[in-house]
Length: 425
Ligand code: HAX
Image (cartoon, rainbow, N blue to C red; front, side, top):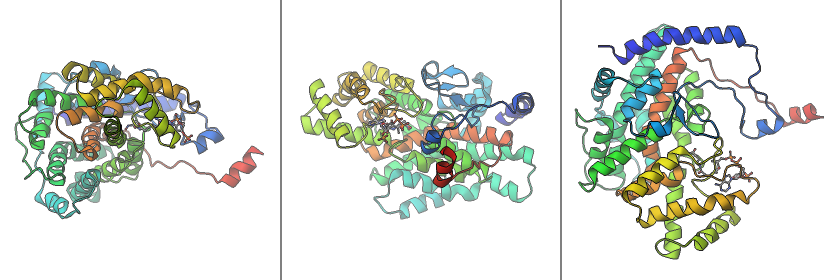
C-alpha cells in the first residue's frame, strides 16, 4: 500500500519539472507591479508568492486544489489534509493508510504538559498553544536530519514528518489547553483509534449533549479554516520563517502568533465578544434598528466591525455561508445565532455607506464563534485555538511543498521614505 511519502515522492518529481519549465518559458514575464501606495499599503494586490494548496479569488472565496470550499464541507480534516498535500482527494485505501499515519503520532510528551501547567493561569490560550509547539521543537526530525547533513532534495520528507507529528498532536494539546485554562478538570488522553475530529471532541470533554451534532460542526470547522492561500499573515509568516530553513515547529508557531491578532484569526473571539456586549445592552436578540445603532456607534468610536471586511474577498465568505447554513439547520432560534444572522442582514448595507471600506461582506469569523458557543465552548478566548488546529493542515502542506520545490529565502527589498520622495519627484 502506498504511503503519503510514496505518493508525494512521485508527484514532487513532476512538480519540480513543471516549475523548471514554467521559469524557463516565462521567467522574465512581469506578474505584478508595485505602486508607491501598495508599498505603503501592506502590499495589497501585489502577486509575488506561489501557493498551490489553495487560492482565494476575490469573487468566489476559498478554492482548495481547484475544488470550491462548498463542495468540500462534507469532508473530513484527514481528507482535506491529503488533498492539500497531494492535490487529490484520497481513495478509501489511501485514506485508511493516511489516517493510520496520523493516529500513530498522537501522544504528547509529558514535558509539554509540565510547561503548560507552569504558565500563569491567565495566559491567553493562543500563547499556551504556541508555547507548546515551540517546546516540542526539540522533536523536530528536520532539525536533527539537517544537522546530520541531509540532502536538499529530502528536506520535504523531514518537513512532512514534522508536519504529521504536529497535526496529530495538536487536537490533544488544544483540548488539554481548554481543560487546563478553564478549570475543566484533568486533561483527557487521546484514543488511539479515533479520527482527528472525534478525538478532539472527546478530549474537550464537553459532555454527552448533542455530541454527534457538535462533532459534525467540529469536522466542518476543521475543514473550513484549513487553508486560505499564501499571502495572509499566518501563511506569509510561516513561509518567511520556513524560508530560513527553520523547522516547522518554529514556522508554524510564528504563523500562529500572527493568527492571534484581532485583524486575523482573533477576529472570531472579538466578534463573539462584541455580539455578547450588544445582547447584554439590549436584552436577548436586538432589533434591526438597535443593531444599526450599534454598528454606527462602533464605527464612530473608531473600531472595526469584527467579522466583516477582508483584504482579498469582495463577496460573502463561503466559509461564513457554510456556518450560517449549519446554524439555520440546527439552532435557528438560538438568540446568539439570530443576532449573527440579523447582523448579516444589515451590516453589509451599512458598511457600503463607508467609502473607504472595500469589502462590506462577512468573513468566516462573523459566524464561527457563535457555533462553538452554542455547543458549550463559551470561553471565546479559546476560539482562535480551534482555528489554529485547522490551519495547521494548510500551513503544513504549504511548507512541505515549498521545501519540495526548494523555495528560496524570502527577502524582498525595502526602501526608505527618502528614497520614495526622490523617486516620485
Ligand atoms: N469595520 C470598520 N472598518 C473597516 C472594516 C470593518 N469591518 N473593514 C475595513 N475597514 C476599514 C479599515 O480599517 C481601513 O481603515 P483605515 O484606512 O482608516 O485604516 C479601511 O476600511 C480600508 O480597509 P480595506 O482596504 O477595506 O481592508 P484591509 O485590507 O485594510 O483590511 C481587514 C482587511 C480584514 C483587516 C479589515 O476588513 C478588518 O479590520 N475587518 C475586521 C476584523 C476582521 O474581521 N478580521 C478577520 C479577517 C479574516 C481573517 O483573516 N480571519 O482570520
